[in-house]
Image 1 (cartoon, rainbow, N blue to C red):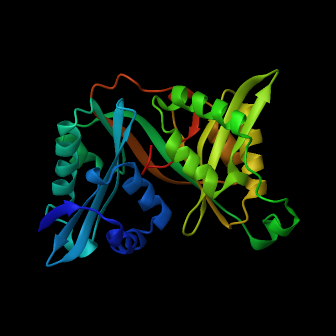
Image 2 (image 1 turned 45 degrees about the horizontal axis):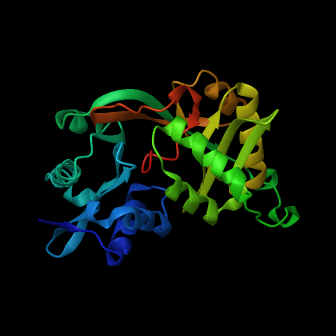
Image 3 (image 1 turned 120 degrees about the horizontal axis):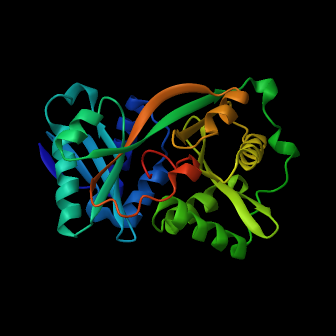
Length: 285
């Protein structure tokens, strides 16, 4: 097994592993990792074939994120995933990142715990499946207009508080790809909530989705559903939020799986999880 830095020529191999796992990411999302810092993205090769991946993003020096940890099913149990994770940790420690975070599945959680990760709070994936007759007609919608730049700046500033660090470069990329999914709610000149969305390989994904109260959360979700023309919609919700379950269940979402937000190191910038209806995604935080 050889561990090396990932390049753009490895994206098809990453997509193959992603497809095997049934994940929703696209090639554009692999490029976000590489553009953010390819020195922190790795692949594991066996006999010259990529059999595993792991990628990292550093958020403003406050903490880093580990995502896209994938191992070919035929090669699981041979230490590839653990070796990749250790390589990510070694790299992030070498550049003195004080905290490393990730979102773990129940299968991965014991592995992360052995590497020094601690649970912070719980997440839940919720899935909505809609019939063709229930989908909005995109032909009747207006053009995909971008949020005005000054308004987007206010949203990005609010996100630094909610998330705990600056991830504006990623959110700008998400907004450029699907501007009609970017939304904010204001009341008397004050922002009450906002959201971004992505078009994945098989589903539209809502997140980050931030709301100060239940009514704002409902408005944001309803607008997203009116803008999405996909039959499947995903969102990864924070269990720390007091009202999110009621909102998604009322609109027909079904519970899919648990996730655990975990950290290693000094978690000095936890953000505001009580405001988080849904995260950007397990791969990005």
